[in-house]
Amino acid sequence: MELIKGKEIQELTFNEIRQEVGAIREKGIEPCLAVIIVGNDPASRVYVNNKKKACETVGIKSLEYALPEETTTEELLALIEKLNNDSSVNGILCQLPVPKHINKLAVIESISPEKDVDCFHPVNVGKLSLGRAELVPCTPAGVIRMLDVAGVEIEGKRAVVIGRSDIVGKPMGIMLMERNATVTVCHSKTKDLPSITKQADILVCTVGKRNIVTADMVKEGAVVIDVGINRNGEGKLCGDVDFENVAPHCSKITPVPGGVGPMTITMLMKNTVTAAKNQNNIK
Ligand code: NAP
Image (cartoon, rainbow, N blue to C red; front, side, top):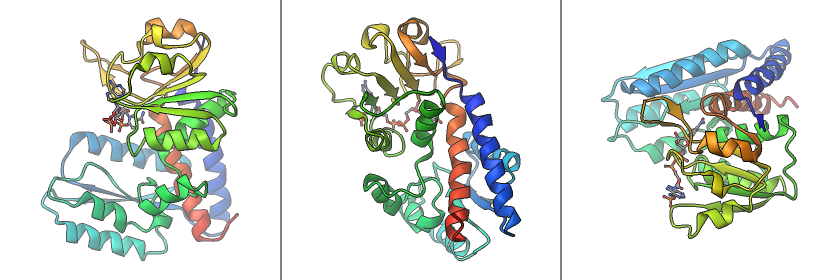
């Protein structure tokens, strides 16, 4: 059994991104990501700080707009409009969740698709399902990157995704299909989950429930990717997979923490560079 380590793959990917950023800067363009945070959610604050740090690490300029809790949808949309029209800003993201009184869908749809580095805009979701994606959803793209770096062949393999959320499970299924895997996507209404997961050469779990994947659900030699982030009884971070008992049956597996976690932000940096290149016609 081999561990697929997110931190190492992040470092490798950051090095590549740093080089790309250097090449773009030589053309007089400074890639720039604008991050909007509304309110005082402590978890969101941590995520936004981490995004800022990642930008510094790869040489992307970052702008932060911290708005008060009582910001209205209209005020937020006005800021996004301003950033959409600012050609020095290549990527825009609004940290979710936004406070309840804000129209989240309106916010997502107001970000210019060319600058939508989270890949939440319906235009980008549509392009992904048409096989014409330019910007890619960060977490599933991070999983694909991990599989590639770990040397896991995807084409022709049976892939099973547990979870069908708009930001992880659904696009994960599409991206695996795009890479010529034969894909099954499972969810809370799936009957006899183990009979399906046992067929998986590649099993991706994105549910958010501890120990939802147990050893009897995994085929011998499978590659298991655990996207879930949970806390165990002692308050320690853990994934969706019963790691201790599942790992011995896998050829490769991602741990939690230290697995998929760092990859989302990594692919956000990659998307920002892609956006900067596209907006400046750089190949
Ligand atoms: P979500 O929106 O809550 O979706 C969970 C999915 O799991 C749903 O599709 C749900 O089915 C399915 N599900 C729930 N119970 C199930 C069961 N018993 N059997 C089979 N499927 C079941 O969650 P998400 O946003 O995809 O996130 C999932 C987990 O990944 C969370 O722990 C989150 O924190 C983590 N995450 C990690 C990263 C990272 O960077 N590592 C990024 C994003 C998310 P229904 O559709 O039928 O309800």
